[in-house]
Amino acid sequence: MDAAVRVFHEQGVEKTTLADIARAADVPLGNVYYYFKSKDRLVEAAVDAHRDRLGALTGRLDELADPASRLKELVAGWVGQRETAARFGCPFGTLATELDKRDDGLDVAAAKVMRALLDWAESQFAQLGRSDARALAVDLVAAYQGMSVLTNTLRDPDLMAAQGERLRSWIDGIAGR
Amino acid sequence: MDAAVRVFHEQGVEKTTLADIARAADVPLGNVYYYFKSKDRLVEAAVDAHRDRLGALTGRLDELADPASRLKELVAGWVGQRETAARFGCPFGTLATELDKRDDGLDVAAAKVMRALLDWAESQFAQLGRSDARALAVDLVAAYQGMSVLTNTLRDPDLMAAQGERLRSWIDGIAGR
DNA sequence: GTCTATATGGGGATAGAC
DNA sequence: GTCTATCCCCATATAGAC
Image 1 (cartoon, each protein chain N blue to C red):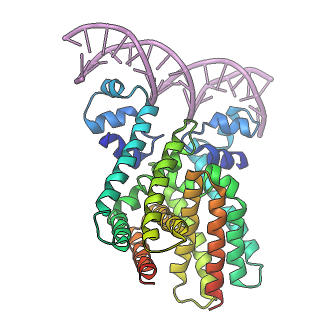
Image 2: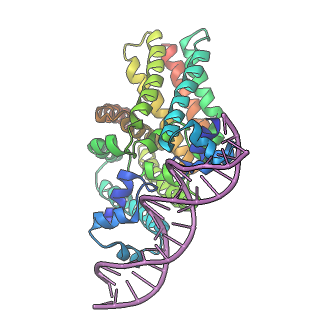
């Protein structure tokens, strides 16, 4: 699964062959089909893996004292991944974008993961006393997805660092109000 | 070319076969190869088409009196395409994202188009007297790409309408300062 | 320049030995 | 449960008639 998630991120789902994943995981091709009966099922499992990773991340962030710190730590994590983002884009955003062009129903699963992130962010803004918490959550996640696309297209990690700094002070402005 | 740009947008480059495009353009498959010697060349031509469309759009916007109107009209155009964006994402952003996962050098051509949009927006903010025009241009384009990803993933055109409204007042705030 | 028929390669999927 | 060999479809690309 780790190999699949990584290779899907780096090459995209469509360009990735099951042989690519088998090689990355250092197992023979036939074995892949023992655990996943088709490529679609493997992609579905990759989406689930993203859901689990997100759950683990927000779980860790929830241990921080205040909502503003949690949000800023989330942003810091994104900025920390800027080199990867410059090469391959957001690991989940590019996957969701790709799934939206497919016939299978996996775009629905991707939407659930995106909503889980929005829900978590909304909860943080609500704890900061904002009645427009959902809109702020959309702003935050959209800002991340947008800077990921630009960082990736322009191959410029500094762009994500600059935008991350902007988000940091934006969160401070909301929290200090 | 029109058929190719449309089908690439709707299905993605990787999922699209040249037979798909030939059918959409109502020409036999063989003819495609008379005008484009490979699929790569066709994709390259599609990127060029996006460059030309962007040039035509900014050319029209440039005829408006003030920079703020031009920027708001740009946003209005995006919002006007929100149903398409909900189904297939940003026509250019999803293409650029896909090209970033390919081996060919077309990601460079995509970056040029993205930079052309950033340059145009930067020029508008500069005309509004902002010394941080480039950063504002990045904010604007990133906001658009981000709301496109969310609108697409969540299949919700209203999200783009709401974000468009936010951008409109953001531009007003900058222009009225 | 238009169109049909087809060659070629590669990727998803399976059979079956071990 | 692991691994090799292979089937089969289909997409890119070409040949060549018209």
